[in-house]
Image 1: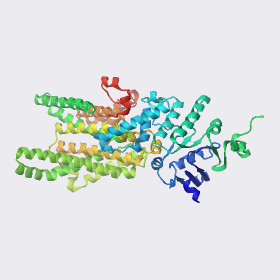
Image 2: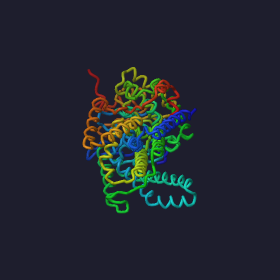
Image 3: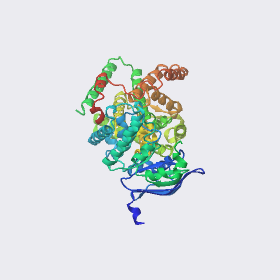
Image 4: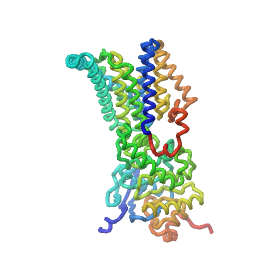
Length: 260
Length: 337
């Protein structure tokens, strides 16, 4: 298959069992560079499990994940991150006791070139890299409108800002593919609209490819170009937001009928 | 600019050191007090190492005395086996004064060797056990500490149960400056990108790993550094105490060091220094009533849990008031000094 080599992300027959329970079964998907794809489905359908498989937190029972021509399955999570996959978490996982700017700096750490010894002895490499890191972190915080909170503890931020900080932190790893796990969870409609603008803006500015899980249909239908629908760990259907919205199986499984 | 802060601190440390010399020469500091001060230095180094492992990286380790004894025995063995020969050869070749100076370098080299051997054991213990979490890692490290003690108790070449005599050759001067060096190195490490990588493991291991931090590497690095410091402290202890015995490095010693770190605040360098000072002074003050000691420590811990559950300092550092005003600017975010 000649076309496969050009594919940005290709998942083939991915399966994951947890002692007998098949959380994901024979899931396949393809993404091209620059696409913005949604992943929806009822609770427990296996959406987050797919994210965990993609980012190396779980090793898949079966199947393969090819990212830009390289096999990802079996790699430890930090190596997956270094290949250019970054994610946010459904239940926020910030470094809660650290300052906002340190949260972002840690994600940038994989790009520093100086050794621990040169940090301990305060050699020039340390100052050079810390300066670059600090400037980059502040730049990102400005984009995410968190600059004035830079020195606050992450756990003291309001919920919406914590969600934004998680995206900022993921961006600091300088990813090619960004995975967002329910970025709009707990946000009010106004915040969700701002988030949609931010996602579009990020994608344009950083030439990102984005895969997102979301229950907020306004957001999914508003920004995604294609939508994968999951049910019981299996792919139900895939299509444009309009196609998916009209699909009777998706309505039965997830969206539901409008009240008469 | 960059180094002004270090020069100020160095001048302050130098002034403090000079003051102690003047006071001890004038007889205001007794020999017993000077010994307590050396012990404080030893325990500050120990607490720094454990704080790096447990306070900053979040890996509960209760076998720190094991690393201390490895460093003590490695340095002590080198000094007691080769010390006399090296000293004699140097005096013959260079004369008494110059020979003595070079012999001091030999002693420092044995201390470094002790630290390196202990660090190597840190890596050896770390690689297989660091996949264990929380309580399980704690149990494995307790086991390690006990294994080291039992092995030393039964090794004839190292004196077995009668202990290993080591000539006194390290006093207040060496202990003080090595302690200061350790504090600076660890402070620099913790306040750097690599230190933040360690802290991120404590904060959220999965998030750290997903952000591209090789968590195993940084756990092992923390273990190696912490164990190396314990080895250094052990070497100073051996060269200061005339005799080392495996049972001085038992489980209770590990526990005491953990108490220092917890008392001062997990994740605070000034906190663990404070903890080491308080505990050592208290231990020596109560040395006439050994049974009372553990009771007092327990009461102290309970009181602390009620009033300061995060330790005396929490994760914050003690700062001078004029620094606090300067903190918070953009410089503070970007420079990492």
